[in-house]
Image (tube, rainbow, N blue to C red):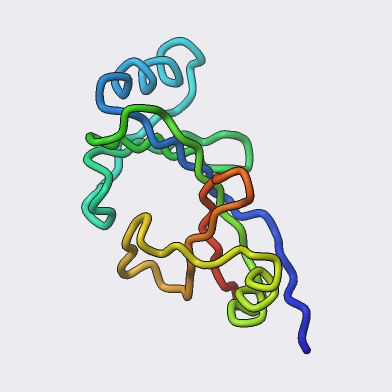
Length: 127
């Protein structure tokens, strides 16, 4: 059986409750002085607004989620073989949870997964 490779992806997303969103954006923009840009959130139905922040080699996405009461952090992973990766993860009890956020038109095969602590990861096939 082919063993998939996993690598860190270039994106981290903070899911931020609406009441804390503007202050969080201002923190990265005004307090830390990072380049913060508002982006189109229409492709993600659970996100009402989004801003991107260059965070070293990573893009930090600040996502406003109107119906959540606490912030959450989501990470991105890449794999060279999504099917083999999904099978390997299933053997350890990790199953796709694609219902967390529907994705359309991103141009790659993906699954959402949660680590044992419940942190969401986007697992994307690179090729």
